[in-house]
Image (cartoon, rainbow, N blue to C red; front, top):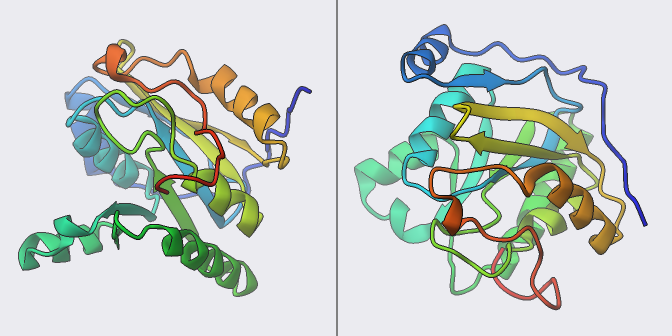
Length: 211
């Protein structure tokens, strides 16, 4: 089965930071973005192979004016100055030893945001690590599907020095077909260390493992 559920309309436009765009440009990077399909959604960022992904991604977030939330290890939030900064930039602490509740909480948050027409986007690196992994984690899929929100496919392209967030799709619920569509778009993107990129696939059982 072939899935082509791309969302082409982008009614939500954002106003980003000229300073962040300038800083990215000075570093040789550019951002590709032409708006959002809705005020709520999940965006995945692939590949995640380097510590440099975080500062580049953070500058891209500011350059786009994209008020994203993201999940982070709870240990990162325990030092008061750093923890406050992480929350300020959108971080949500996750207990890796008990991660299942965070998916349900985020689904509820998305649904409440839809009911109130509030802005709520979650950004995730589905590999969950900079090291090579055998598969992605499934939290992004579960949140987007259960909340009924769009999924954005963003990527780092280090050879071209591009951060792109121009592809959005509606999940069908056919996991194999959805993942095939995601792999067709993201699977060939090259991070800073291509050999560390995880293959674009979910774990056996799909609901198993960390979010």
